[in-house]
Image (tube, rainbow over all chains, first blue to last red; front, side):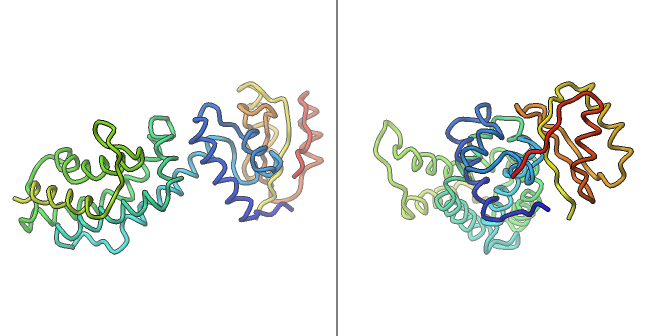
Length: 196
Length: 72
């Protein structure tokens, strides 16, 4: 009887993400992964039906981790300014503490897997965020605008900063180091812009 | 927990899968199966309520395919 070994399974997940980040989806195969983990192909197939199954399960698992991290200490009933601040902090923390997950999502973003996985993540996440936004509009804490405008203003600046941070450079190749100070400074602008 | 049995085969085409489907639907203890035709080993993965390794290998060979168990 074959038994699942959690240590092996974690190694498989880690290596799979590393390989996909470094070599892309097309260069990735079950055989290469088995070799990289120093396990037999058979062992790999105990955990997963095929490459699609592996990438999909991995994406969903990382997505759940991300959603959970992003909702820590958050409630849709919070006042808008406070809720958005928590979202910024949580998303920033997740990005810095889970570089592998973030890079993995980036690597699969524009593939068939990415679309399917992001559908699943949206289903977990969007009801709560929708409730948060609706409450804020109802309580006159947030301007009523299209969802796209809202998202661009509410989160676009944060992801721009995080993108600068990952490159270590900002506009015109200026060296950039992420700091809480610059994050809160930017958040202040965002809150002013979204005020009714 | 079902047994998970892993085989190397030469099952390559979609039509081959119909033959396998006929074969496996007559073995009630097999709860799930798939062939990863993208892999060089054309890996057949079978979930079974009991250990049917010998029976699976001989049935698949009878259909004219290669089949050997992949060990851990």
